[in-house]
Image (cartoon, rainbow over all chains, first blue to last red):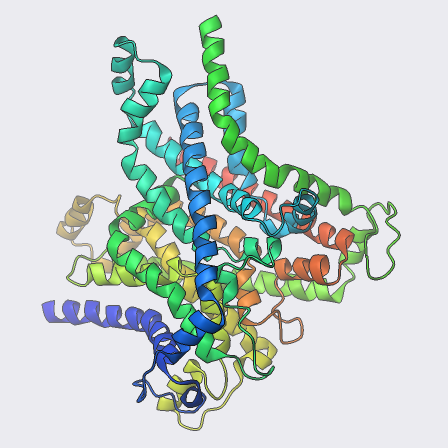
Length: 274
Length: 296
């Protein structure tokens, strides 16, 4: 009976892991295979002539460094702005009570229901009229806006669970609002900030929609994979696409290996309430 | 009283940055979408720019392309959701097992969730290729001589799109179910075991009632995400073959950015938005009912 459970568990694990990892492994070996050997059947799962040539041509011919840098600038900017804005908002939502505040909270959460594609065209025209299309500023605003509902929700949940005792003690000491926020509340928010930063970072890397519709010249990584030039309309440039895919995957996998626990907790915290 | 008013003012000031950024990217565009949907704005076909009332909405329901899109969006959502629930709960039970491979399994299932759909979609475009793709290569190891071009036949292309959607998102669904599983105290199972209940019995009388609330709520959210899915089709099939995998979001993009038929695109957008509103209404209603049942 014990042996049965044991092999059952591992059997299932192997099946699930196989379904997830085999395609990723296939992308990986494709990226190491010289283009000439890639387009043959059956697939060679252990490439004979593994090479980094595909990576070199991506870096030197297709300027992937610039794309990575653009991604980093926009992601970094929106992470900073969204964290600060949502922290302040969550503090207000959990520490003060008024009809206006509940309305504001409702509006922020409700706005997440509007499908991006529904407003894409008018938003494009609106941003264009303000010369924000194809600018770092415009993209950062859009990315930040995308992050706000989820971040506010997580931080409100977290702050709501912190007892007010600490702040009341500070009140007695005559601390003003700013001192309370920075000296008492902020240090307690560490885990919530870390969790939202990690998940938001992944959200930004994943975003295809925003860069697709609102920028042409500034090309982030997620879009970059779709714009690799084709040789002809029948063949995909799979050598370069798999390489680009793996360049995006590698930091994500490293990230997960380091932050597995925190990411799991973050997803669950957002899910149970939301 | 004055102090209280001052405090509320301060609170509103703190909320302002988040509210302004969010408002900047949503208020004007959603208003314009409703407004535009009442005008003839087909830039290519010499649109007059005139107010035409509900004509765009009338056109929608006689448009074959819209009907095909709706048809596939419904199939995609329903089929994908059935498998999400079945496979997602199964995977969640696996993730909840206490054994040595737990950490490995959890890291593995996080990867599809964390990677961009566009990478999965682009890889899938090639994986379902007849000659060089991964899928047929694996099939040929068991059944040599198998040949089938998945993405050029309507039904198999639709199937492939759903498969990729499941590959990417079932792990996420499972993690959310796992959260609910972890709230079930272990000693309930212990006492059920003492009372002589088998594993199957324990699953249906303890696990299912305890996770049903979570499964229902997240299913509503996942349904809404399926209804507005875009990336998978953009990266994998470009809506083809023909229009058979053109999800509604993709249809709106074609009308708004390729055909430059702004009024018409807005009308489809409004319909989609109203459907989303209905679903969130259902969501609120269901949560209320469940809470009432649980006596909360």
